[in-house]
Image (cartoon, rainbow, N blue to C red; front, side):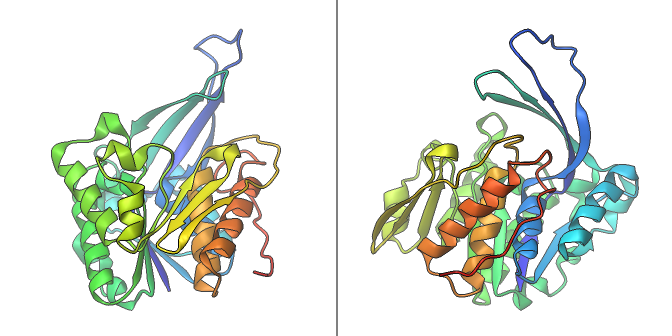
Length: 294
């Protein structure tokens, strides 16, 4: 069983053209949140997936529940989250591919996940996935997510971490938590420059035994292990919305790995999931397709 602990939120998006003003309206809401996206894609691709998250009892929360249910995710909602509004993010795409995020997460359901919400799930999981964003958005979510990671690791689960570093949100304590999470992880999904932003080295982490699968959008992925380094080409796609591509990659990789794939095969499965996800609007909207591993 795959366990994911972290935030779920709704995203509103807009694409600014060269002649578009800042008053262009946002589209949405779309079900989103890095951990929720990874849970969605892993479950769509066959992994039995449980998500512990805080979701409000409102229309935005229902949008999230609908997509998680469509993917077959078993969702354990924080009881404290039901007393708060669902979190949101506003994403602006600029010409040239740059993105700007504005989060409305503080004080929302997303941060309400408490230790009690985990129950015995960390000890029951064979794989736990954590996004670094869950360690940045506030308490009690950060402490609960880190506790789930430590407990699952101690119980023998495989642990994967997507650093999801947002340098503007890093504090000394969150930086230390992220560094600890990465040293405990057997599989790491960094984007370009994220490991270095934490003062760590991909090479050192791989030498210590981790599988480091760095993603770089259309340039594909770089897989580093003790045994060697491989470049996994990106799957061809016609991008419509790149939000959540890395999280869909992680979900695809995890589902394939849990089904017995080698790291190289799992990375190719992740690349396919990412390519399918960006071909439609919304990070949790693609009807991902399962394919034979070999």
